[in-house]
Length: 59
Image 1 (cartoon, rainbow, N blue to C red):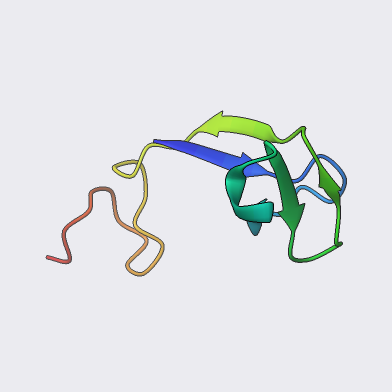
Image 2 (cartoon, rainbow, N blue to C red):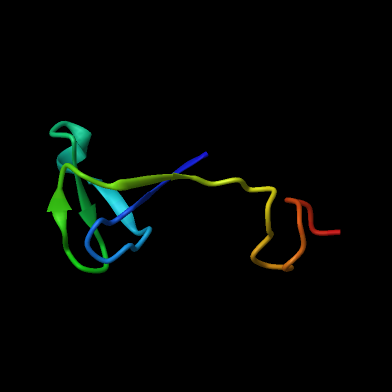
């Protein structure tokens, strides 16, 4: 799974701007608007943020 981040503040609260028709993104934290974002590979199985354990399941 790919995760986008803002190149200015490194926030992951990045959304498509203008309905995705222009290829630009907007950061909800710092109001950056532009075509560039940082894309990183995100593996959901590495760590569950709710339990602190590996895996997606809540066992």
